[in-house]
Length: 349
Image 1: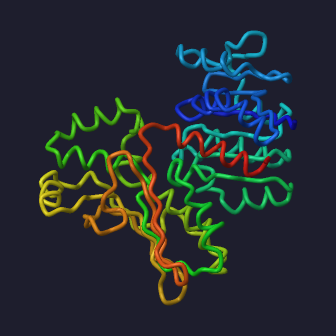
Image 2: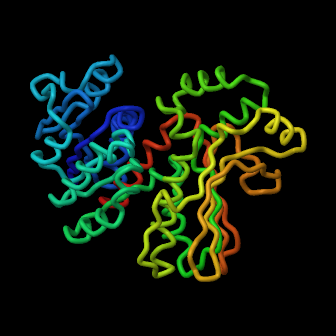
């Protein structure tokens, strides 16, 4: 039996669910993979807790479900203890970084936590788009220098294994085009508007469902989809094209959904089409890619034209494998949280 000591930064929707997942799957992980995966440290916005022998996952979950902080963990918690300080000083094998994206604030505290862990020779698993968008090359170079792994499959389309699909199953192919619906909430919003629900009620429902960020502009203006497209392109196309230039957010022609008239959505529905915020990478003659994010009406025949309100998908058009599509139904954030387990097992099992 191999013990895996984890630090967790961020105990919101994903981090808390991951704790529950470890609690539920512990016996299976020990029996199937010979791994005893435990949390030795955890941090939220108000403080942190560390115990070398391991934290009680059920106790961590009780604290968070009651609206409290992990810093209240008996004999191990400390109010005001910053996540970056915990990562810099506590021993662990792997960091699970699931703090808010915070691109407008330099992707902090996630970026500092990821940097620090890699420099200390600690593997990193993160669904946080911010550090990967802002410091892709730096973080990959750090991981290579220290001989550790950096995994972020959950940063692209929740629980959908988009990066794994390309790296594992499309080897040897040239990808001509990527079409993706990597943002769930925009499809949810557009479908409700097409049903005749007013904007205000639609946003209220999205907040209540937990699918819309506190700052709705991140999703509704296309920033989330653009960030995911940047990660996808840099991860699966850059090495194949042999390009040195990594794409940035400013390379994506971006149009969100806030300018769409509900009547436009209803008209498309009447014609059998469904609007989705489509992220595309299309190969040019010189081998570079044209990147865009914009709302488009999709016919039912399109691989992404039948996506439901809580579904995401990606389509890869290739030279030798034809066109491959993958879709995920994600009624709650559990599949996104489970993507961290998938990455962890890929490193440790």
